[in-house]
Length: 288
Image (cartoon, rainbow, N blue to C red):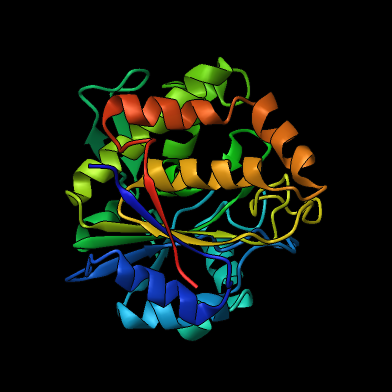
């Protein structure tokens, strides 16, 4: 059976919650809400007010991990300050999963490029996962969506370097590119397995720049907003977002696609499907 992906063109906080309910998956227990805190200086990241009804509904904890590069989020102290400055701490309980070591090492027996994934150890405190993704371009992955949040997003600072370096953090900037994309899929698979299906994914196609929210200096959005999607399948939801970009007649579409295609962004989706993270064929259900 094809996974269902729910879609609306109305980009409103209440619609995020409506689509979550339509997935039919009620996240139980203590819910980790993986989001992007936004690098200081970035103008495109989605603000906490937008996700407030959704996070409050599941009584979730906003979770993040430190970055592996210089900026406002590469140490626990600076990242906590950024979370406060950007308003996340004002509305929600926040948890830097790798704020204190040691990391939790998740096995990836079937991993194509890496056999272990290093994530913030606090992940063990949660029963369910809600992944709130801002779909847009990315200067290394081509695009950022649910699979990136599962992989690079949940990885600890060390784990991010490990994925980028395809098992060797010293190769952060020099690893084979497709191997890096496959390592991202490997890492995503380990997190999916950890939560044993207790996860829901929401992608918001708004403020779509070619750059990620991790960029302090990012290009402004290059195409019009498209909508919100929700699914219990991370592969299907990312594929659906790509398909919606391709189907758009927006004049800025080609600029975004140039970024995605030049970095072979779809290969992360291909690799994730091959591992069993989900399916690329889906049923898109449009909601008014």
